[in-house]
Image 1 (cartoon, rainbow, N blue to C red):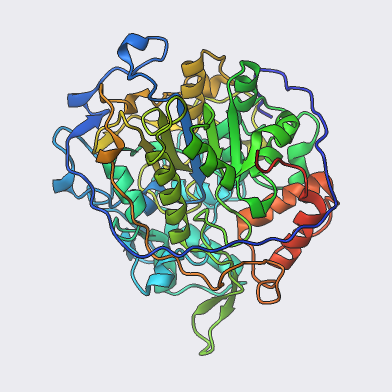
Image 2 (image 1 turned 30 degrees about the vertical axis):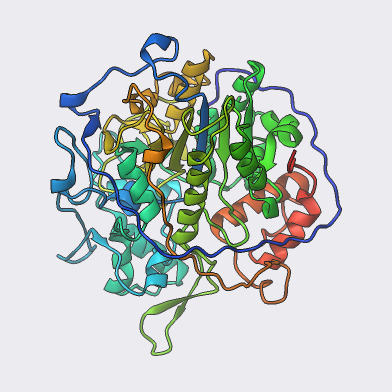
Amino acid sequence: MTSAETPPDPETEGNRSASRRTFLRTVGIVAAGTAAAGIGAVAVGSAANQQPSLRFDDRAERPTGAFDHVVVVMFENRSFDNVLGWLYRPDEVPAGSTFDGLHQGTYANPVPGTTQTVPAHVYTGATDYIMSSPIPDPGEAYPHVNTQVFGTVNSSFNAPAPGQNPTMAGFVEDYIINFERLSKGIAPTREEYSVAMGGFSPAMLPVFSTLAKEFAVFDHWHAGVPSQTFCNRSFFHASTSNGFVTNRGNGGYGKWFDAGQSNAVTIFNRLEDDGIPWRVYCDADQLISLTGVLHASTTRKYWKTNFRTMEQFYRDAESGDLPAYSFVEPRMIFNHNDMHPPYGDLRVGNNGEGVTVTNSAVSDVRAGELLLHELYTAIRTSAKTPGSNALNTALLVTFDEHGGTYDHVAPPAATPPGDGKRGEMDFAFDRLGCRVPAILISAYTAKNTIINETKHHGSLIATLTRQHGLSPLTHRDKDAPDLFDALNLATARPPTQWPTTSPAYVPTDTDGEFAPNAEPNKAKKLSNPAKGLLGLLIAEFGDPTAPVPDSYEDAFEALTEYGQGLFGTTD
C-alpha cells in the first residue's frame, strides 16, 4: 500500500448519542433566469500571457489578502467536458488564450462491433430528463475508468499494458457494458448508450458558466485517482488514498478504518498544528460529514469543534468569521444537491423493447446550481472589515471525479504519493484521473481567465502549505502546481463589478417542511454517495456486515442510531 510520509495523530473517541431528532427542511424555489458573462482577455498558461506564479512568502508581489480565506466546494461525478466543455466557442476565446473544449475539435467514440460512432453532443430532450442525465449512472470504479480511458477490457481490472497510450475512446463501450450489467444482460438502444457522450450547454448551467467566464476556469484540472469518490476525496485533503482505488472493494467499507490504513495526516492536521483556523461545513439534516468519517482517525478529535452546519457557514460569511480554510460538502443523502447522476433499477419497457429506469434516486444538477449560487452570493455580499469579506476570500469550485461522463483529454502521469509500493488492484498511483470542472473566484482574478497549466487534487494542499509555510503531506502535493496563477490583477475588482447569478428553477416534489421519514418519502431511493457515506458510518459505529441502507427510511434510522451527536452543529 502507498502511505503518507508523516505519522498519524493519535486517535480519540468521538461522542455518540442515541437520541432521536426530527429532520425538517424548508425547500426554497428560485425563479428561472440567466446571467451574461463578461467579455475580456486575460489568459494564464498560454505562451503569450504566461506569468510567474505568485508566492505568499513574497508579499511585495502578491495582491494583499487575496487568499486570506479560502472556501472550497466539491461536487460529485462530472467531467470537465460534461459541465464546461461547451463553454467557449472558437470565436469567443479571448485573444492570446487557448481553451481545450469540445468546440475546439471533433470528438466521438466508436460503437463496439460496428463502424458507427457517437459524437460528443449537448444533451437533448425534456428539461427534467436533461437535468438528470446521464441515466443510468455510468461506471466510475477503477476498472471502468481503465476501459473509458484506454479501451481495455480484460481480466486484470482492465488495466492498460505497460506503455499503452490512452485514447479516451472507450466511454461508449464501457457505458454499454455497465448498462448490460445493471439490466442483467439487456443491451441498450443507440439512444440509450449515446447519453455517454452528452454534456450541458452554458445556457443549461447558467451559474457555472457565468462564474467560469467571469473569473478563472482551469481547463486541465485532473482528479487525483482514476477511480471513485472516497479515493479522490482522500487525495484532496490527505494527498493519498492509503493505497485504495475503490470505495468498498473486497475489504468492505471497514477497510478505511483498519489499523494502518486510514491514518494519513490531512491538511486539517497541518493547519491545526500551526494554529490556523479551519472548518468543514455540511447539511444539518445529514448529521455527519463525509470528510470527517473518511478521515476518522486523524480528524475525530475535531468533530465537535471544527465541523459545522451550512447555516453556520452563511452566518460566518455574513459576520466576517470564515476561517482561513473552509470546506463545504454538498448534501448527499436526502434530496441531494451534489450533482451526482441518478442510480436506479433497469427494467424492460412495456413493449418488450428498450429499458426504463425505476426506483431511481432523485438527481437534478439544478440543485447543485442553486447551492453554488448561494455560496457565491454569500461571499460576494460579505463586507465585514476586519474579518473575511469578498476582497480577501477565494472560492474554489471543483468535483471529486469525472464519474464515467465523457472527457476528451487524456490524463497525464502523476507523482506517486508515498513509498513506491503498488496499491489495491496493483495500481501504482502514477497517473491522474480524468479532467473535472474547476473554477476559482477571487477579487484579484480577471474576467475570462483561462488557466491551461495542469492542476490536480494536490494543488489545493500545495496552495495552503505554501501560503502558510507548512510542510507538504506527501510527494504528490510537494510536486503539485499551486493556484496562485489565478491571481492576475494587482487591484481588487470590487463586488459591485461581479456578476449577479440567477440559477434555474429547481423542481421539488415536496411542499414546505421536508421529513425523510414521512410516509410519502420513506421509499425514496438513495444515490451512490449517500449509500457509501452510510456504509462508512455503519462500518465504524455499527455492524460492518449489516446491509447498507438504500431508502430514505433506512437512512433516517441509521443516521438517528449511529450519527446523532457525533459532529458539531452551530456556535
